Length: 281
Image (cartoon, rainbow, N blue to C red):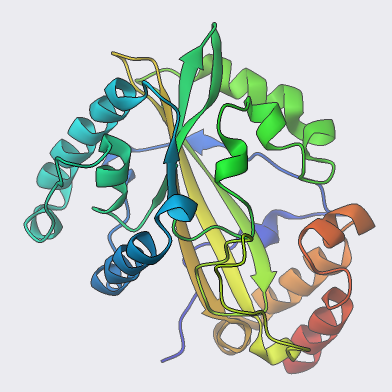
């Protein structure tokens, strides 16, 4: 069945592509998204956690208290806002609290904790990484986490630091990111455990990947939780449901500076994909 993208952040691109933080206030009623595909994705998460536990979850020592606060708030939120979903999931008390939390919802979770008066990457439950390595991020500051992302710290580093400084428990935020990928496989770990990438995938075989991220600070431990809800759909679906959006996506791809296109792995295929989007729209 042809699907419409739930968000279209590429339409916000004007002129040459630049990284945009694009944070906006988050209505806590919409903190977590429970989709029609929740059962499928939770089963996929369970399979990934079982097969690749050290790839999908890691944590610094002494992060349990921070994660427990997150888990308690998450469970209360699900019971209040998504009671039918809450009735289908169960907390595993034997797990690290963030690991347990990640198994309740479709979102991936990244926990930033305070160490020596600065926020560092304290723990992650990430089953659907977009070709980045979870283990290598442990203990890093936000700017260090983003170091491999071409031009990001240069364009947004101070802005990100300022947003995190101003983030308070009563002012959560959310933002969007996007990419185009040559597979529909949500599990894109880079440690050799993911399925081999397709060879010379055609433009029409690519998928649009949209990430809805929320940022929330918690009052007791002062930790910050990032949630990442990943949506994917085939590029032909976008062409079928919204030709103007498909053309806007082509424009955004073509406007990427070379370093960003290389980082997004569109340096070789990007122009071909953009041409296909325009000719098909």
